[in-house]
Length: 154
Image (cartoon, rainbow, N blue to C red; front, top):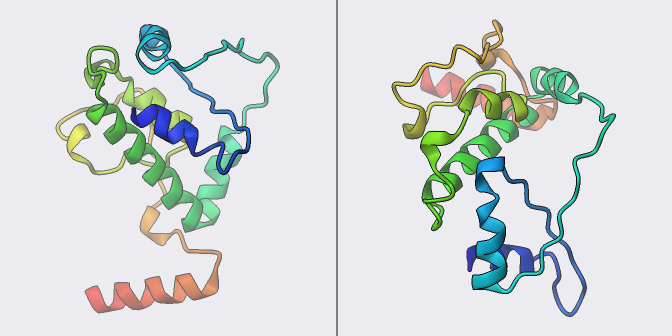
């Protein structure tokens, strides 16, 4: 029901909309679940070939603007938490997630601190050597507020 609700947000007030779902090979049974239980019409899209590797560019953007860095971290956390809380926990098993690959896919500079990652090691993920606290916002007002907050914390 949550999936159908979120997809419904793509087509509001009588308009047509589409949703794109990325599934790992081990999650393909979710397609059957949706078609049977939610009556969702699904259409498979073949993976694109000759795609550009945008991850280095995203990493550069995250290093240059704290807003991009924080959005990547929030998106990763949101993804992992949604995965952990999904109603189809027989299909979406958090213990089967490759957190290092997922973090690289989100172009993260470091792993976030979150309960789902506590006590885990990620040898396949290399965090940047830059102190991420030094990444500033491009937006001068946001950076000024951040610096003020940091000063108050000291």
